[in-house]
Length: 294
Image (cartoon, rainbow, N blue to C red; front, top):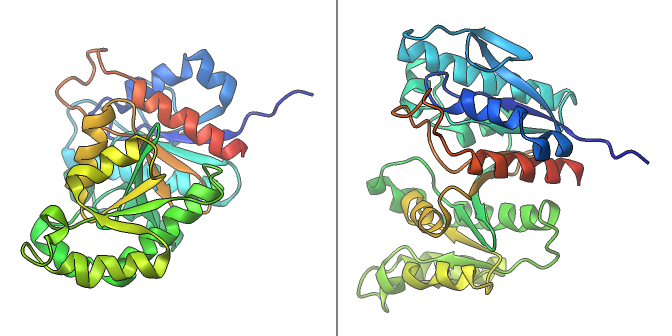
């Protein structure tokens, strides 16, 4: 029996960046074309042929125009997924400042996808045995303590457990909470949030911790935990990128379809030079194809 390849929408991202050339590399990759059928969504005028056009692009056009096109491509890809025309979405990088200038209020892919689907979502970065989920995403560090509520942490644990079971096939996920403060507060000496907020959430949700940031990711990478919930963006992103930059995959948990992306940005400084590393984009596409087939 011939295996049916899942069809995935792949957005080209910001047309000024490396997204178009990465998508072009995907289309020429035998492992990718064997695993899935790609439907390219983006503006005409980039170096990749698009199947679903969301306008046109010419080099030298404004940052705002680039941001609008990048956001419009995500909107169209979600429409295709919701209509059943594709079984998953892979997104090339976009520029968050350009996205805002282009009229899209969401600060990034994760928030935009949540708005478009009406779902509660969480951002996971996955690389081998290390999976990191962000309890808060694109907000200033000074706003983290106020945003890190028991409800938000519990939601992150729930979405992580569901995602690990459904997408990764882990029947009984082991989830750890990363502490907010140094040394998990050290008995209140360096802050009380870990004792008064994170520890009760861990007990209530069946997670472990909170454990200090300087050890919990090492323990997860060694296989002790299936995922770590990070309290804020940089502590989680730094851990995963130091451990495996270029190999990580961004997975949006909570959506009714799989969505993945690479672990890097638009790399405007090297765009068009043909030297961008496609490894993470390739890994993201293969993982999305695996999820979609499942």
